[in-house]
Length: 424
Image 1 (cartoon, rainbow, N blue to C red):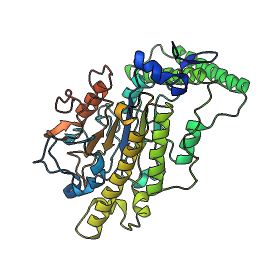
Image 2: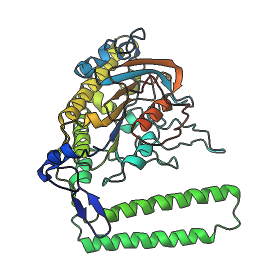
Image 3: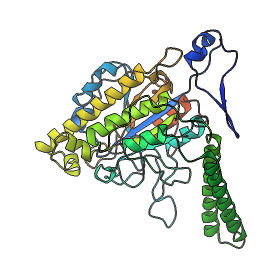
Image 4: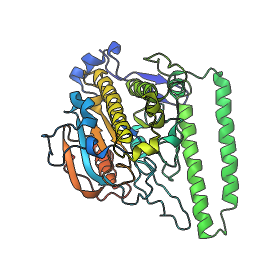
């Protein structure tokens, strides 16, 4: 039985290993509890849902509620999921932007003279607190089909503290290699590359400081943003150095085949999300999902945008099939989170919070954003249907979630406070 944690040592860091049964963790935990890390997963889709068959009946609230047709595939997980109605981002005004402001709640016109502005997304707030001890502070997953999936501007669901978009890995093979394939470049060469990057960064930083004097207020603000971007790069370089000599985790699943799309792509991306959490490669993950290729994989010939205007007949049928498929895939992900066990016998789901939804309700409506939450990681009520007052800030949900994860966050986006109805 170990008397202390085991560590991997590198030239610049000492990194704690995950709690492993083969090192005697289970017996050790019986006498001295060790905290299991918390995780956060954000899954976003475009084009909204079918109003009449996705949302639960507003007359059925609390624990006494029935799953509507669009959520029926989640029946075996009803005790773990909570559907929240009544939330929206009050500044949203673009009916085709399903994810641009979903996790930020920003006002796109908040910056004078600019037609587009965003702010930090909830996942990046979570990453600042939960991602310090993992190889990847956060993982951004996406799809090459984003333009046809109703997402709007952005490269992923994630936006940094300056409101700049963070890039996503947009196919399962790229995600697999990012997580599990070690760089074969010799260590000395990788160290030299990092030194070169630092040298370039130092040079541009000095150049920027020399022009700092006698700038207008607007130019000074731009330069401050530039310096912040340099600090962000410095942090990433430091993280790269910390993990330079630490091998990546062994993959718990085979490499995906090339060319996956639609339903298969989503399913494998979900498998990779579980693998990333299980190996503690990252604790904060976002996935901006495809819709267009999902329809194609379901043999639906209606165009995604046309489907979102679900007039009776073929379009409505397509919209409902989309809802059904998305719910089936989500149920499969929850199955895997439940089945993946921690060293103390609890499940990944017990220590994770999963948010699933869109900034668009249906058609072109931006109120009552579809919002589904799952998991025990953020101390939220599970197995509930909550109907909140109309136009409750969606950021109140994110703020409640972030605080439930143990993060000291005063506010987020346009939040007005936490939701007592959502707290366990």
